[in-house]
Image (cartoon, rainbow, N blue to C red):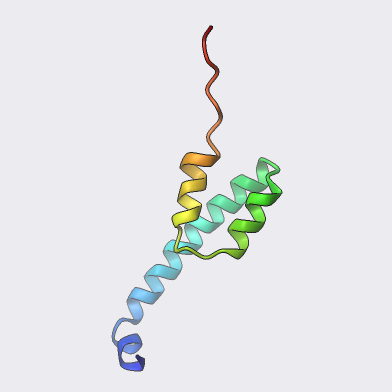
Length: 68
């Protein structure tokens, strides 16, 4: 395992940067919208950006008003 980590250290750094970018964007948006539950979940759960991307593009979208 140590040899793998030494050989692919750049992959770990890339994953860390990727995750931090998405986590920062999602935390910022959830805080601005006052969604404390989402903020706590996003802060605690680490999913390499998957949950954060879902929040940004699926769960935080404003509902479009239906034309009656």
